[in-house]
Image (tube, rainbow, N blue to C red; front, side, top):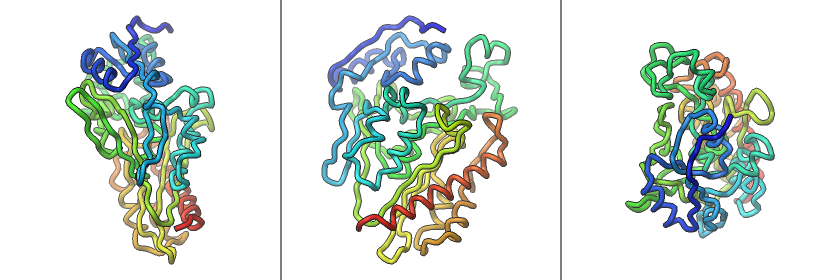
Amino acid sequence: MRLPKFEIKRPRSMDEAVSLAAQYDQECRILGGGTDLLVGLKKRLAKPRVLLSLKNIPEFKSIRQEGAKVRIGPMVSLTTLAGATELPSEFVALQEAADAAATPQIRNQATIGGNVCLDTRCLYYNQSLQWVASLPLCIKRGGTTCHVVNRADRCYASFCADAVAALVALGAQATLSGNGGGRVMDVEALYSGKGESPHVLGNGELLSEVTLPVSAGKKGSAYIKFAYRGAIDFPLVGVAACLTLSGSGKCTGARLAAVGVTSRPERLQEAERTLVDQEMSPALIADSCAKAGKGLTIVAQQRISTSYRRAMLETMAGKAITKAWERAQSASS
């Protein structure tokens, strides 16, 4: 399959990038590593007039700690992130998630900004024009049918970005820049929950930075992924956990996040509440992970039944919590 025709713009500063994004607006797509976007263009999932490459903006490629925050530029590759010595040990879940994505060759090219802004995926959507011509147009392609859920009034495509689960569990924030200025929001607030339009970025806005809060205390984190294959595949279920322990071993803070199960990254809040203010134990973890899917609308997807996806969510949550607990126990205060 060949790429469609497009212009490519290569700004050398954030201000220039913001100006061009505003100028071309909906005719423009942001190009980071291109590992997902270019495949989508070949399948005609998008037909932008302009691609705006961010690779020539130096500050977008940096990882640095300033006071109680670690700042990560959107063009930092997943390979760089996975091996970054600048990151405190409490953020190991993010490095595990970055290292779990795709293959070494793709991680060398893919960026954290692209992972945060990844589109949702569906077996019936991420196909060539020839393949989808045999079916009625789905909602995500502008039709009125969801091939995953009969008679649905919205798209149920899954959000499957590994690193985002870790960012949400770690309490990360995103800085968005546009012609009207910038705004900062929690990473989990970037997502609408709608498979057909998963992000809440405004027209002409681009992700300019991801920040992680550095905090005192005994903290541990982990990311666990379940996929068809150990490499290449997006997660069918991916769970990140971040725990904070008191000196006595009581859980004083818990954040759990999952990807691959709905159209957005999901906080597993019932499971979190089970852990907080309790003495950690295997029995408590079992009780917590049994509640991981509570309140979530999980549908059969990617040839996997609803019951199996829910069971795997609980299993992955248990593994992530256990590993985060072990790491928090060995962390220095």
